[in-house]
Structures are given as C-alpha cells and as structure tokens.
Image 1 (cartoon, helix red, strand yellow):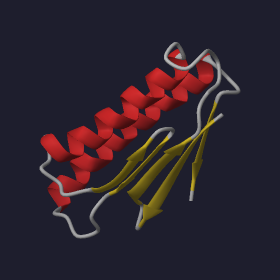
Image 2: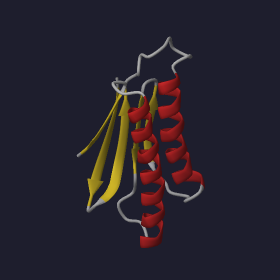
Image 3: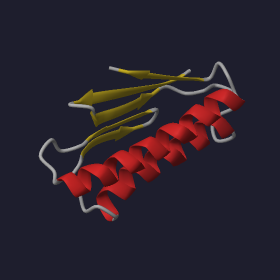
Length: 107
C-alpha cells in the first residue's frame, strides 16, 4: 500500500511524505504507483521550477518526502496551496478509482 502523509502548519501544507508501493502489478507495470509518482513528483518539481522554491526533499525507491519552507511570501504560499491541493485531488481520485492501494492522511 502507498501511504501519503500530509503535514500542515498554520493551515498550510508544510510536508508531504509518500512511502510504499501499491503492489497492484509487477514492478515497472504498476499503473497506480506510476500515477501516484507522477502526481507527487510533478508537485515537487513545480515547487522548484515554477515557484523557484528551495525545498528539502528526500527521494528514494518507494519514498519521497518534500518539505516546504516555512517563511515564504503570501503570494507564493497561495500558489503552493494550489499546487498541493491539485495533487491531493488527483490522489483522492486515484483512491476512489482503485480503492485499497492508497491511503492519504493528514497530521
């Protein structure tokens, strides 16, 4: 199962951690893992490339943790929220379409 943990500070997402594998197909053929990876990596790269944020990230096989800086401008904070909520909508839709492979929780 893939576990997505979202941590909030002051209502804003401060960290997203994804771990595990869906196990719905052999490695390299797992559409659920691929879809989750695409959404989460797009969030991570968008923070870097589109918003020029210096985010801390830990990326390994079956694991990705992205920490968003605490001190950012209000305009950038709103853009981070939009990107994060877009990612969460996608993850919720994956879970709705393929129940039992993905768990999203908030801290």
